[in-house]
Length: 150
Image (cartoon, rainbow, N blue to C red; front, side):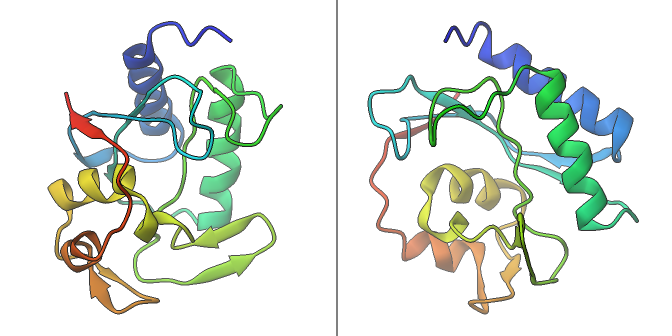
């Protein structure tokens, strides 16, 4: 799969999010990350954005799935190369465990590629399951994948 211009996919995703969900309140830097889960895949770009919306997490998820589809996301292989992968990391301090929707994201505390950008925009944000802020979670992180700020 050709991933084309990774920066363009990020920019297009943010534009769709702003048009379809809510204005972006904060954005992290863009980070380049070794592939997680499938080590022979190309490096990815990761970025965290913060929104303020009255939409429910379920509605946001449906809109996100639509945006991924518009941008060519295909779910052919677990952890396989993809044009875009948009996740809901947090929804305020709400805990959601429903089929297809788990918030906070169940793996974010184990992944440097989510914690590094989160530290930039919300270091004091408290994870409602672990009752620790993002800086604390990052200090306990065992993930050794290379994550570079671009």
